[in-house]
Image (cartoon, rainbow, N blue to C red):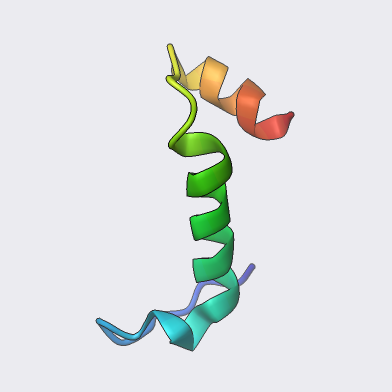
Length: 46
C-alpha cells in the first residue's frame, strides 16, 4: 500500500484501506487480548 493523505471525514477516498482496517478489527482486534507486542505480531502473522 502506498501512503496518501485523504480529506478528514472522507474515508471512502481510500476504501480499500478502510475495508482492510474494518475487517482486521472485526476478525482479530476485537476478539484478542494481546499480552505483548510480540504476541500481537505472532497473531497477526498467523
